[in-house]
Length: 135
Image (cartoon, rainbow, N blue to C red; front, top):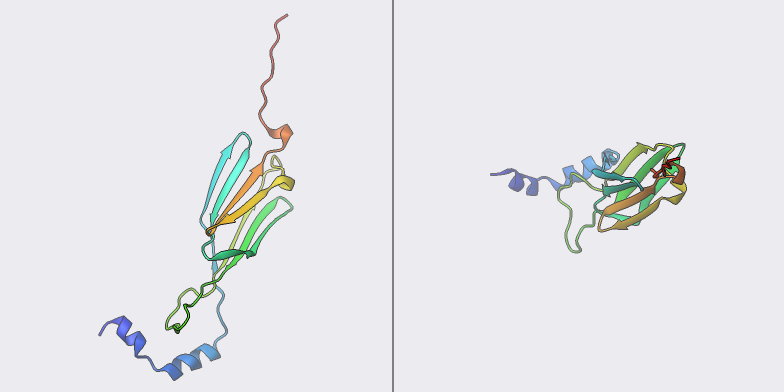
């Protein structure tokens, strides 16, 4: 007998008792992030599978960028959940931003569970070419 068969044959009352006795545990996951930087600013890509725009909170406060989100893991109609290790994960991650970045111009886009944040540099922090004159 393998583990899958044993799970399917567990006493259903015991499972119901265990679930009702323990409070639901909230799992917080750190989303995987890629960050690209150029002279114009940075672009941050965060993997947030199962997250919708309504369950996403992106904030900037005191030089910190925070990303918090709740994922919805739907159970297909007509099926009963037998075993779940991740029910409704909570994603959270915080980044410290340099004062070189203009936090008032951050753009955010969520598509297919991937959050894209574009954070531009302040104009005065961007590299600029200095013209050299000869006298």
